[in-house]
Length: 161
Image 1 (cartoon, rainbow, N blue to C red):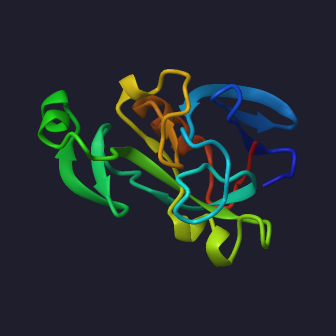
Image 2: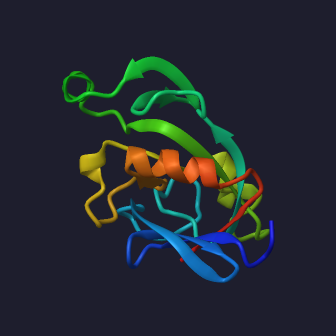
């Protein structure tokens, strides 16, 4: 991937921009952590700095498929399912698992993005309201994460600020 091609996630604007040849080609609304930016394990913060897509998960699953521990449960998210499990942090449709690239900042030790299981993932669409409300991950609407999933490759770089 060309260094002019990457994803930029703005926690200020709650937006993910797909950048090709230094130009924004597509933008999506997101929800980052309600606890703000931070890298420490257990902080429930969104890690900042340079990352890469470690793995793409769920490409063959239908929209609104429910994932637990990066595995599809066989469930499809509905409001009825949400009422049955009101405390679940819903991970839906697709997962882009992130890995930090900056040693000591978001890579290795108690700041390692991958071992914190930080993802870009689908979420109930009504939770994407332009506000930081996640537990550290970057939440997206289901149609948007499915679209982004098809556009990116494992190893693609991501900058979060």
